[in-house]
Image (cartoon, rainbow, N blue to C red; front, side, top):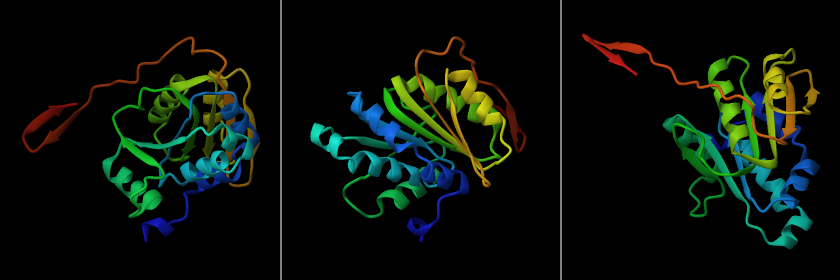
Length: 203
């Protein structure tokens, strides 16, 4: 069953190395209560994030209802993730969103597991959008299933003053807190064509 699928290696890395104390610190200092996972798989790290926030006594005393979001650009992947995360329950534990861009709203923590075989420009776009959505002091946690990674580390260092790195035999996990807006934004929009029988379609 879909719900029984193991997380992809990059997502499992992120789950195993979530900076829980830092996540709690960010939550304690913020009135924003939204966390977001941008996952190439089923988004199981959204549950892990929700558990960190829901099980901490000091946060429970504040009685803030945390909103857990998983974002996709592929409708089929979003449907599979919703089934895996929420099943048939009437109570939606994780809100699954499928839109062209990341929801334009403040976020406290964004988690981004990335596949080493993933599309580089798409990942750059996703990371830039995640940084834009973060509140001041918000936390971006990213992982990749590549022990020799340089690409993701370089992207993180370009966005954050300080980046913490955890390197393991199966991949790397990085995190940084937002202290300022990005100085430069790259426009990732592009135009391309594909043929449908005799018709050339511009996208």
